[in-house]
View 1 (tube, rainbow, N blue to C red):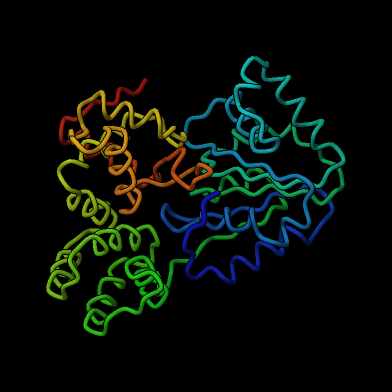
View 2 (cartoon, one colour; view 1 turned 135 degrees about the vertical axis):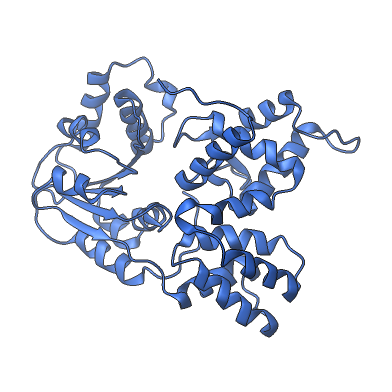
Length: 347
């Protein structure tokens, strides 16, 4: 899993890590809840790779559920995360065969299973028979927008609701995203703190605005323009995310909108994506570069602007698979519809 900058949440990390490695010996469900963009998945990834978790559990498993899911696909994802075998190894197996493999692998083992972005308790009900209830202190971790999912799944589960970042934490995150390890110049500090305050404690909003600032010429007047426009934005309408789209170069906009054609929460193979962009005519011809290289540069720029996330990396650290945060995808669908880019037909 790809490392992300995490600011704040130190207390939450220690608290939830303790819940995972201590407590009752029976199977227990721990939940991280909160609105989109607060960092639930980011925190879950940090916990998944936390030293205390690595030392405590025999098996670690991960799957992304999302609003619509297919049970066989979830079971395949779980087996893939547990065994590192290619997913095509499991495609010919029936649901019960997949479930039996998971059960046998976990029997008498202490395991840690993350169900990321679970919208309805039915997803857990569809899977729970494949997870042994031995007294091995195993743990299930949900990330969800809905606290009711956690309470419905277990009467003795623990629910952790993520707080918003403080203004100082937003400012710290904004500086790291824009300047990296370098110090923020003094002339940007007042306007920068003003922008950080406007992000309302939401890490995703900070990341989106930071991507705009990082790709701008470093002039205080330009930052003032961003700060002035933010004050008129209505946050709940996601206008703050649309600002990132409006600042995209012309050649990147169709590439970004093309993500609206992909299924929610699915990892998109980069090689396939770049080929589709080229065939659609989105990639400008360059006599000195292959079309594939130009397309990859487009993707890297979208990643650097926090519009697209890296899901998997190649051995050379390049992006192997990518995806999109729910809030960004919602905005992408809306912009694609507004600009008549494509129409999503829901059954």
